[in-house]
Image 1 (cartoon, rainbow, N blue to C red):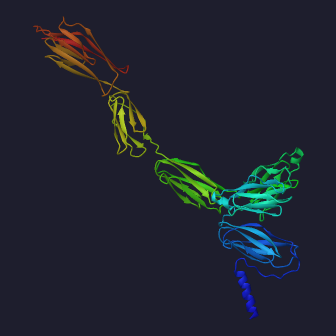
Image 2 (image 1 turned 135 degrees about the vertical axis):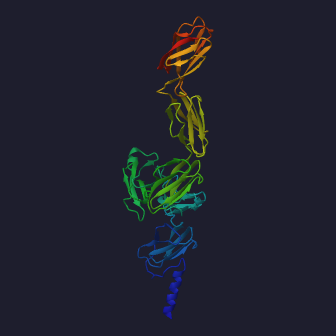
Image 3 (image 1 turned 90 degrees about the horizontal axis):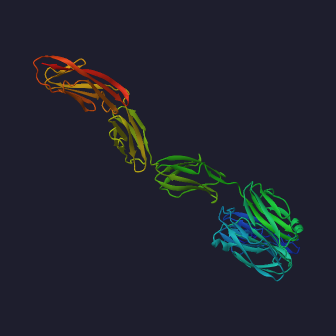
Length: 574
């Protein structure tokens, strides 16, 4: 029965938050107890351990654990190690006590994966000089947090015998109690780093300060950090010493600090976090450094432009591969997209006129790239040909056209309808040009947005002349190259015309060389291409005929001679 009871007691002790495992008591008196680390961050359901040490190391007694609010965390412990489990988001304080001495642990429970979210604490000063009895206000800020998050800043002083601190949130009141040096450590559930303020209480007026309190870097980055001493001499500035301390779990060589004295260069070598310290005498100033893994999110191109209905394939790349990408689009009506994560390609489809931005953001919420998309109709009119060369007797020419936006009506007109006219069929997307005569004409095809033209040129390279005759009167007629008119009201009309229709640039030169039969024969041009003879002589008793003269005709086309001919003119009496 005794063994059963002991077993039940142990189970009960372990099952309750804040309980401890019993350990044998020692005999040495405890001078001090320390818990390391004294500030920690844990997620709900996650566990971390802390180490308990005593002065002297073999001090006896059992460690008892207490917790300010076990809603946020639970603790189980031995005399050397405490196991802390996060439960709910928030902050609480755990206390380890042995031999009448106690040490606190500030425990912040943050969202799972929230550690390393990029939020950090910063303040206006990293080194404070005070004299015993002095009081002053100190402020801090959570960068990367909301206004409501500022109230979660926790203040803790390492040596409460030197400094008293009263504060919660962004502001605290500190009071110097006695000479000495200590540190104020600020933490927050959303930050995986702390911010430290060094406080020296001795009344000294020479303070050490740094140009930056923190850096967030990526491997390969280089930053400069400068120290300043109030009223410091050149030799004092040169005496400033620098060092780096890597956080637990971080490679000690994650940072390289080059230089000494007033300014140094900080080189990020690998991911990790730690602190750069500047030391002047008994004063210490520090700068927290976080080196993040190289992150990248990049589109193959930054701009996509086209018309509604167009498709584009855009590649992208990102790292690390363990992160996910969240896609957002400013106007899904302008464009849509589909993602092929295996090929790291997006297919973009433009839907309507407008502009939109597609953004890909890594799951860190910071690393991103954007793709600008413009969807706009080209508003173009394209003709299958822009010129027509031919003769007026050619058949009509039909050409095709394409228009954007689709369905936009096209109209046509001619600047010289006597040479050529045009008609359009917006259903079949064709334009028909009909020639009429020699010359040039521009056919204009236009929409409400744009216009195009068709240059038309029509001419004959080979052209003849047709001669027709209208001869009246008895015994009048044509025989070979001789035109005979009767001496009693005989008429002869000669007409010259181009052998092909639509010819222009024609010139006719008529020349009659002979007599007028005593005034009975009249001759002359009726129009440019018509020449007429009229004989008004009376009856005579004798018969016969005689040649009165010769009619000459020269025809040119655009200055080129195309015909030279002549006729003998006879009058017959009877």
